[in-house]
Length: 310
Image 1: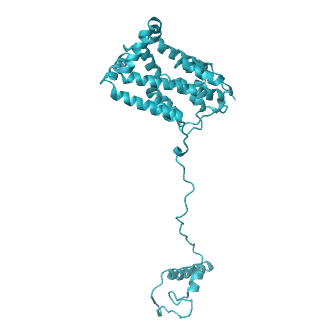
Image 2 (image 1 turned 30 degrees about the vertical axis):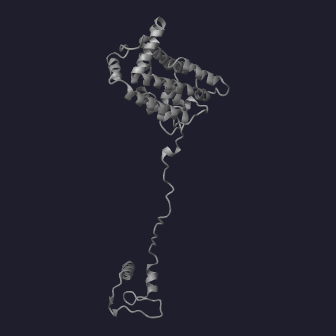
């Protein structure tokens, strides 16, 4: 009985509270009254405002959100933190400008004729042997570049892998956006800090020497070495004529030269990660890789000091 009585009282109190929220102009005694010079405004059945406030003081107070407060958890776009390396930007602009200029100034169909020869036989397309070697090396240069860049790729704003693999098809045109926005890393790195592919494959000496053999084969299989020995003047003059007449030869030559210089620029940084810092030796080693384009960068990766295991 006590429980039933409490439920009845609660129901009546709730009814009074609901009436306080929705007052009617007409009550059982007539129109609600207002007493002058008093703060007790009658609500519902002659219910003063003070009583109404007491019954509703337990209700939660909803505060409007201040729209002037700026959300502090908004993420800053990653491009706001990108650093710019002017030498690599200048090389990128120069390469694209030269490639577009040559493509509009060459005789119509000149480059397409050479490309069709590569489609038929990539090793012997029937043109100048030196250009054949350079063109094929552009598709292999991404391997020594990966060996140089991947140990220092951790913490960069852009991922290195897609740009490095894309350079196999587009050379510096695809690699440029990555190298011109990366931050140099000269701190010592251990193998345990690297991913599986970098530590087990790119740092593997057997893999490095296979890369050297592949790059050398591009010079040998194209006939460039034989022509250089038997007729160096004819090889060089024929290459000059081809580069002056076609955009593909001249643009590929610039691309190959830029990749060679870019790879050399990463050598001192790579040596610093292996504990070789200071002095002129890192820069002398970097300069030596330019003497044998393509082969020099691959040889460096095969001969460089290994990273510490732990």
